[in-house]
Amino acid sequence: MFNNLQKKWKVSGWQVLVILIIFALGGSLTGFIGRKLMNVFEIEMALLYILIYVLIITIIWPAAVLVVSIPFGQFPFFRNYIVRIGNRLFNRKKNNGKRNRQ
Image (cartoon, rainbow, N blue to C red):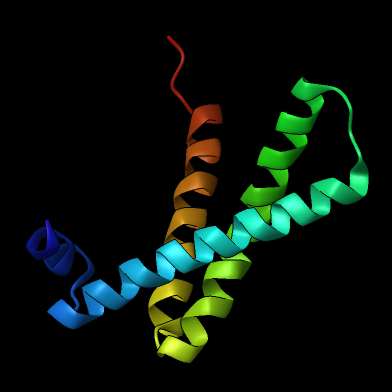
């Protein structure tokens, strides 16, 4: 598994470990901040709570991962990673509207 990630991301073995730690810390930080924000909103309906929580963590995650990556010296990797994810999402939206209709 580590070798596959190392080849895919084009990083050293130790960098793979550091990157996985940053993903874990960034995700944990996202969950912590998301729960704190949800306590402020005091939403009673379970479905509405879940929808808003998913939206909040989706927005917070990229920023949290970038912030966590700075002290580990991996900011350039994560900046590029998040840009690639954004480009993929953006291109999918564009391509859906450009399909050939026959």
